Each structure stands twice: as C-alpha cells, then as structure tokens.
Image 1 (tube, rainbow, N blue to C red):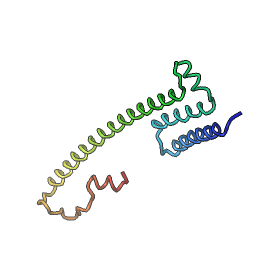
Image 2 (cartoon, one colour):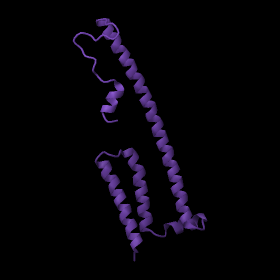
Image 3 (cartoon, helix red, strand yellow):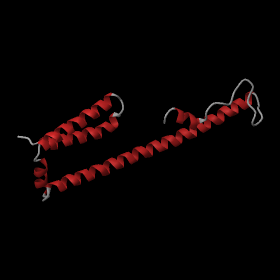
Image 4 (cartoon, rainbow, N blue to C red):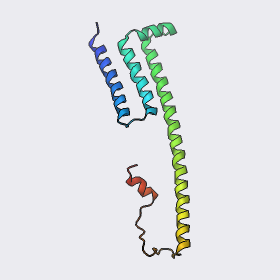
Length: 145
C-alpha cells in the first residue's frame, strides 16, 4: 500500500518527465540538455516507486544514514552539471568572440569596397544611400538576443 507522500512524489516525478519530453517536442529544450533532465526525472521516479532503494544502496555501500547518500548523490550531480554548463558557456563565449572578429573583418572589407567604388570623405554619406542601418550590436539586440 502506498502512502500519500509516495503518491505525490510519483506524480511530481512523472510530471517532470512529461514536461521535459514536451519541451523537447516543442524544440524549447535541445536534446543535448534534455538528457540531463530525463536522467533526473527517471531517477526521481525510481526513488518514488521503489522506496527501499536508498536503504539497500546505503547498506551495500556501508552508509549508516541513507538520506546522507541521497545528499551525496545530489551534490555530485550539481557539481557535474555546473562543470558541464561552464564548458558550454566557455564554448559559446569563444564562438561569440570569433563571430565578432569575423563581423569586424567583413565590415572592414565592405568599407574598403565602398571606398574603392566611390571615395567618400569622412562624415559624408554616399549618394543614393543612407547610413541608417543598425550596427552589428544593434542588429543582435533587435533580434531578441
């Protein structure tokens, strides 16, 4: 017979798993990150369904207080996830720096092409053109990034 706490934990775990699957289906969460969440949801579901898993595991590892094993596992998981996201953020920062450099080079090439076609004095706009285009940073902001 299950108690109300176990029923609530089963429902919450199943809801978390369903939410992750739905976010992946809607493409709001990439498959790369969904794996972490699916593993967490399945682990919570297993802990909810099999109530003695902590006791059995703690006994096998020689831990005297089973909830301490859960805290150790959660701490380990948080450290691993933090390390993973640090790697992802570092990779994105490098990609952004490379893109900024490429945009600067392309902008310099474009200016040199414009200058070779019809030289314009500084501060003067080429005939037939307007200089009302947003710069790269403004375009990035306008796209909602």
